[in-house]
Image (cartoon, rainbow, N blue to C red; front, side, top):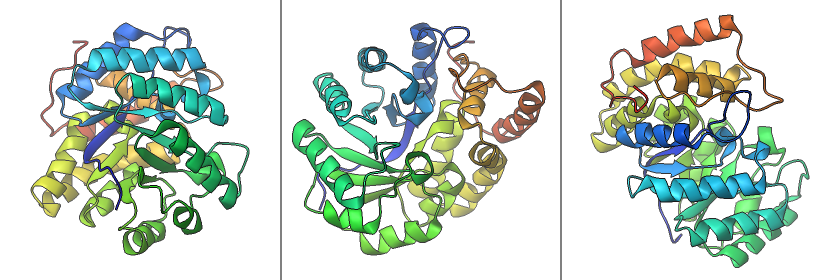
Length: 307
């Protein structure tokens, strides 16, 4: 069996920027951390895809890791998003995060290079050897171009620190396969917002969730209903309210922009995305705001730090 386990809501934090996608806004970051932890999320994961890691310099990512580690104050556990197209940068960032006290790493396949299964196995074994921290795999073939297939998982079966997989392929068949054939090797973690209820109904106990930046109370409420209380009827009602937001974000092609606008609506503005992402149009904002207001109408929340 693996050497680690996660449970609850893992918030992959947005990276706040000054106006026009400028320098990192650490004051806004502190308010965001207050907001998500005040609403009960269990883990904070800086520099994931939702944090626009691919558009941050190595130095900026280290600044973020250091700031979050120093600011969080034990209010949530910490995983570090240290993915890169360059293995040397992954190792550098991961060792830096390890020295700051991060509990583990979240890692996707190196993007663009399209490693074969054999090459992907060798890649993760090399990272594991160099860093020696728990690793949560992140399978998102639509972004990386590479699937973390059953063959790949069999290739790393001996690596006990590679303990789980955030499944973001969108395939329910893959979710069933992982639960059936690999439950003794890796912990399955939900990585598709619009499938969270289905994952919880099958007993999955962790959700890596970008939208929990601006809907943290709702994410925690869904988790507690389904997992803590085993009340799937209550969970289904929460998911019905959230689903229109998730569907727009997952299928609308502007996940990061909607996520950041959601933070603004929640009272914790984090600026806009960096180029080449463009801001939402006024019509897109209007449509999203309507869905956001419907999703949040019935859930008690901690006061936003920015209010």
